[in-house]
Length: 110
Image (cartoon, rainbow, N blue to C red; front, side, top):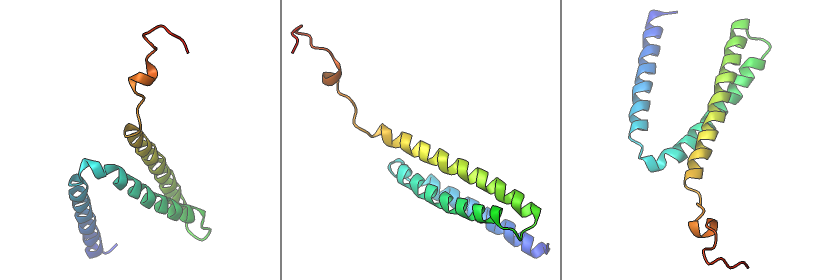
């Protein structure tokens, strides 16, 4: 690989990592759930791309191995992300009130 291309690739990766950290750290807590849902959709797209790469016949074995790793990690990311999103949304769901749960104190039955 050309050293200039390698240095440019590392520079782009470092810049993207720094920019991603800055963007995510400035998101208010109220918007974390919608942001997580959007990133799950993006992970779903990368899952489809990794499935295509893993199933292609004309790529070398190394590409198939990387495709399998990509499918595995993207699947874990999507399933875990939706699980966490569901858990966070349940926190904002309706709660049972004590009037509905507590037994009648008067002793009268209906």
